[in-house]
Length: 85
Image (cartoon, rainbow, N blue to C red; front, side, top):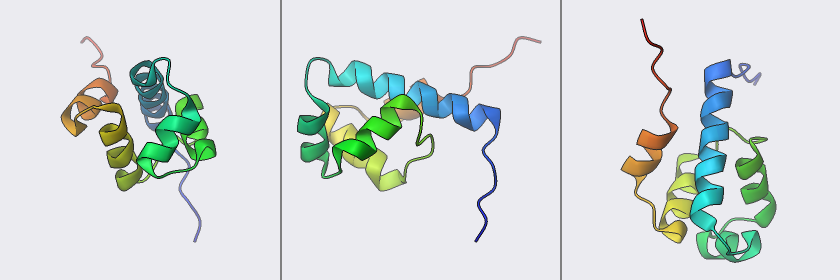
């Protein structure tokens, strides 16, 4: 199966998600947050740096729980920025 290349908007959304997760993690280590979420620290590192801009829903859900974020907040903060017309 060939994966369709990501659009610039999808890549930018991944960058915003990574930034949000880094901010929410604060002083906690990647290892600590990843363990709470039940994912590898390498997966969290890839998401935070934008190298994995489209993580699975359940990965995002687990991270939201570990970081005390709602899925609504994540969706809102990672939504595309509207372009003024």
